Amino acid sequence: MRVETELKLDFDDVLIRPKRSVAPSRASVDLQRSYRFRNASPAAGWNGTPIMAANLDTVGTMRMAQVLHGLHMLTCLHKYYPLEQLIDFFTTDPASPSAFYTLGIREEDFDKLQMFVKKAGDQARLICVDAANGYTKFFVDRVKQVRELCPGAILLAGNVATPEMVQELLIGGGADIVKVGIGPGSVCTTREMTGVGYPQLSALLECADAAHGNKGHICADGGCRRPGDVAKAFGAGADFVMLGGMIAGTDECEGEWVIADGQKRSMKFYGMSSVEAQEKHQGGVKDYTAAEGKCMEMPYKGPVAEVLRQIMGGLRSACAYVGADRLKDLSKCCTFVRCTRTHYPVPD
Ligand code: 5GP
Image (cartoon, rainbow, N blue to C red):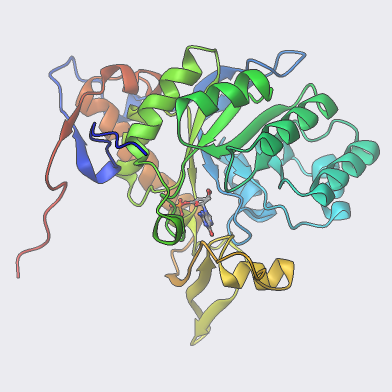
């Protein structure tokens, strides 16, 4: 047993220090990024605003993908769509180049992907291999298997939160982008249930460094609750930021809505390891496991485009405060200051 005493940080432990600069106007800040990936072969690239909808069954919907495609953003579809619907989507929908086909690590998930490839060829240009715990050899082997099946796909894999495992997934697993986040999710209870986790801002700083040194990329997954957190994630070196809770409750989500007077009021929002999700998709919680997710009522937020407009506005302004003309330069221009409080409540 060992204790690491160096302080590790979460989004709420820091602020971004403003810097004197030849201020770019907020309107001119470029949020588009252009990436080339290390393992997809033949070489593959992507251009757009690097924000992704998470593969939660309420958020990672085809409707979400259609709207986010129009905004040059990405969506990780949830893994519960039937095969035929996925084939139809990926072979006919104009939004499909902005959607990840997501699979879990069970045998049947891989069988389904094999069937998909047999019937639809290499139509899923983006593939996400998703596991709550990306630290197992089994997981790395699964990522490798997906890479062998789909050599040309841009492969996103996770979750992990430490640099050595980022490198293992990039080098050993053949992933292009590693998803970073153990425990920060809004409806995640892993930290409470297991005591396991890693403060998300430090995880991003450390994992970005490990990935970029190997021409790899990372996606920050979990813990963004406000637009400023998205700016901090990019500032810490994330190449992509994935959102669940921030875009849950928007029109593009699917789930159980509370409707009053003909108006949407709230939506049931739950983690994918919650009792609710396990009952819905796996026929209940297994005896030997405990749920590591929770369920809440998420207030209705209107169209997702409006929520994302706010986030983009916050990002442009963050860039202007530190003198970055482009989102690409935000991490280079970013100095974080540790603080004891990030914002103040309205006076009583
Ligand atoms: P959010 O943006 O809501 O803070 O975080 C979304 C992320 O939380 C998801 O992309 C996923 O990685 C994680 N997550 C979703 N459901 C669960 C769950 O039930 N348990 C855990 N440990 N993490 C979850």
